[in-house]
Image (cartoon, rainbow, N blue to C red; front, top):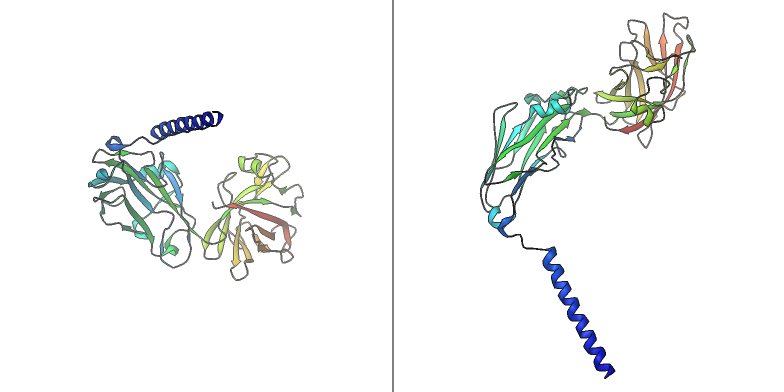
Length: 344
């Protein structure tokens, strides 16, 4: 009797578990049927426009962007919806480019070409529209950006191309992922954002020292232990200019006077790299060698003066100012670490 009771009890538990399992499956995966909605979107898109950064090497080799591919998709709920023809309109959105960053340069059509998927056409030049036709069974179309000669770009500029879905037929809805901006800049391997630290000695005015957030500290300085922000901007295949973006927005080297932030007027580095061994070949003054105020730049050979494995740069250099008592000897000695933060 006891054995029969155990068998009957176990069978009852098994039936109960089966019933609960059946209920769970019915609730979790209800059939979608024809009640679903077709959506159109751009992969990596957003509202407002998502920014896709796709820098290219500053060399005379044609380049097709690999990150900045405009990939248009339709997400359909049924096979019946997939087997229809759908038309999507995409705007060459110059307004979105300006809204995203006033410093973007609109990409001149003379500097790039487009490769369009079958079924994609464009009407008008800058600010025109693309018509994207999905044939039955198709769910993806692409627009590729080609740069025939990257050395024709202004390496100090960032170019922007904007794409925004504005309409779709066949009852489709436009997703939030509807707009992208492709940012294109010609950059050599050393181009990027850096955090600058290290001692500085001025033989003419010892009160002048390296700026490390003593006054007018920026968000960047606070986040990087008092370092000042520097952009190395490509101006040639192996050449970069030192740009200070947050304090001055210009080619300057910030200093601390003892009471506030200042800068050496008419002085900023242009760095020439040796690509063979990833070292620094020499430096010159951005404003002239010498500048109108007799300032020039010179590499200090006692320094390491090379790029490290983690992309940090160790550099020692002089500022020479011949109209000062130091004459042809260094007025200011810099011993700096440029910590690589990331692409600018």
